[in-house]
Length: 186
Image 1 (tube, rainbow, N blue to C red):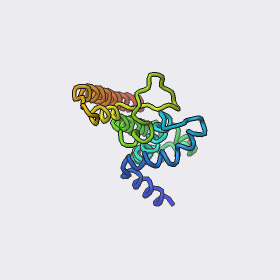
Image 2 (image 1 turned 90 degrees about the horizontal axis):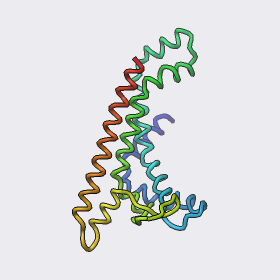
Image 3 (image 1 turned 135 degrees about the vertical axis):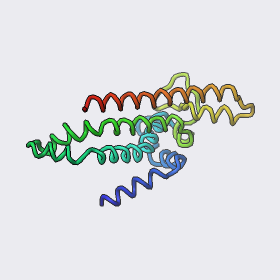
Image 4 (image 1 turned 135 degrees about the horizontal axis):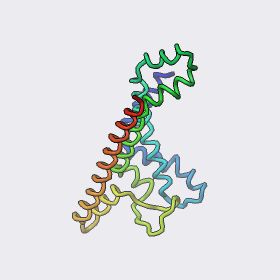
């Protein structure tokens, strides 16, 4: 069973995001429609992005848990700690930098995602945004700006710079958090 789940997760990691977008519209849209959505919407895009990120987060969490030295776990158990205490007091704190890195780097991937969001959120710039209304992301807006009759290269470059700065800040945050967590564990 464990091997089947791992194979499924690895398979989901390689699925193109446009396929996730189509699945989001066909499978998740009825959920948002039951909440009152009439068309593609921000919530639908967010749910689809969460599903896209799950395989990456699961794999990075699994790897972070795997690199925790077995000796630490054994020492905790031999000192009389229960399995639950060992997990919450030793294993998770030791793996937390890797888990957080995986989550934050996955968020960085979402920032540049556009194919799935075109299907699930739309390309509509909304003055009054709401979870059940159409919207757009920066990456989708770049596509929208460049695919029109009069491509606006300057605007596309400005949006790209904003995305790059955001991802850079996110990556620096990951490094700082990881270092701080590793120091606090030692």
